[in-house]
Image (cartoon, rainbow, N blue to C red):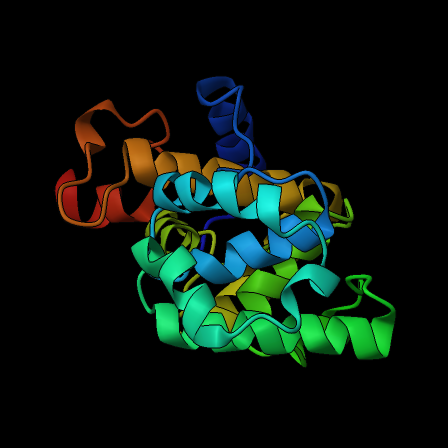
Length: 214
């Protein structure tokens, strides 16, 4: 059973006080940089991506700078991010589409973003939320784990989890909630050894009540 909407609001209020500086982990100056950084972040840490993009974005400032680059050459520049072969092809093909179809501009539409190579729903939500300041919840591994543990969601499916979060959390808090849940997942609600004893929301958390406290 999921927690109530009132409990969800309490969770968010506590997390806001716990993580007052919650913000995107990826460094970017515009929608193009965020899109590329988010594609690179698949199965890679934000810290590692930021190290790579610090050099990358000095060289490639727009899709036009990347669209004709040799994928093999680009692979070497993003190798530290892992899965670099697929990421290289996807990024270059995405840049070609951005140039040919959108005049080099990143679209702010979910469906259009998801048509780009290497862009799934999570990546699209990240871009929409952080680059375009639209209300959206991106469900990554932290958000999925933490929200289902707490009881904000109750599903083993990522898409259903996203819809359940959109239902229980007020729309104006969707984007902030994404960052708060990530911070909580990294700092306290870890995958293997969650620090339930010091968790500020354990009095509401379904996982704590059902599996730890008893």
